[in-house]
Amino acid sequence: MELQITWFILIGVLFTGYAILDGFDLGVGALHLLVKDDLERRILLNSIGPVWDGNEVWLVTGGGALFAAFPEVYATVFSGFYPAMMLLLLVIIFRAVSIEFRSKRESKSWRRNWDVAFSLSSILIAFVMGVALGNIIQGIPIDADKEAYIGFFELLNPYAIMVGVTTIALFMMHGSIYLVMKTEGELQNKVRAWVNNCIIFFVICYVMITMWTLIYQQSMIEHFRNHPELFIVALLNMLAIANIPREIHHKREFRAFLSSCASIIALIALFAIGIFPNIVISSIDPAYSLTIYNASSSQKTLTVMLTMAIIGIPFVLAYTIGIYWVFRGKVNIDSMSY
Image 1 (cartoon, rainbow, N blue to C red):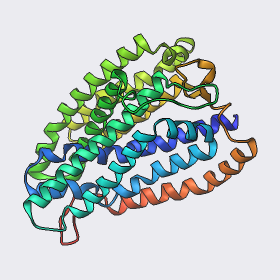
Image 2 (tube, rainbow, N blue to C red):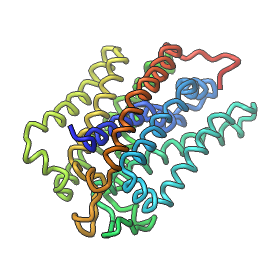
Image 3 (cartoon, rainbow, N blue to C red):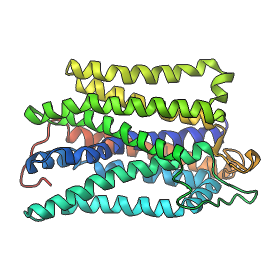
Image 4 (cartoon, rainbow, N blue to C red):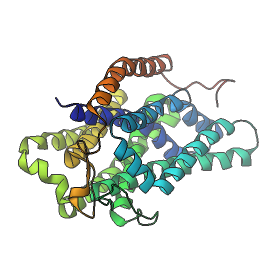
């Protein structure tokens, strides 16, 4: 396999890991204000408390891998999306502050304000990521010099906004299932009722964005038209989504969570198949698009970085597995909790 393809897959795996892991805690944040009791909000916050910062390691690792393997993409996207990227970083920082500061005082107004900040920042992070993804799918104005010229408000086009809303819906579904696993008693029953509503919200958004893509983004279906066997990915995605309410009904929350993870994997695989071999499509001229070939580092760099990845990724996996094993089970509130 060519090194460029290997790195395309590897970066996809890293961002998929981030979407699965940080996706559920962003979903928990989006659902946070649906409970009113302070103890219940603390339980929701502590369900992600031991893991939320570790989940973001996957985003940092994915960004670092993108910079090393495809520096032209990193430079073009970060310069073209600069205001949006700064907004995203600001909101990520603000969300972390809200988690840490929320329980520093007993004041109801203090906690309420940080609760609002935590929930809105979680929603905004998911939305901005979805908007970025939507713009990459439909293309951005990249010229022959690999420079992207696009204003902040130009990013907020209807298609990208719809992808952003779909991303929020996906993470809300993912987060609600995670909360069913981590809660018990009356709160668990309350959260369990959210799951089907979140699934309905996501399915409606997913159907709409799929129809929109099929009609207006013909480049995304070219590989599927030429290789019908790839439709199995879309079929597996639909089966994974359909299995979630079944597992929730039978109170097999972990299996439902695995189905939600499988759905995220399938969605990112559909995206990757659709844009390959492009990474960023030019809306000015397809010849100006950044591909895995014209935007990659040298073969020597890719080889050295692959060696480092083979050594380093098992440590990231071991850390992630270890943390989730230590903090498995239901949430218990004590003096050390948020």
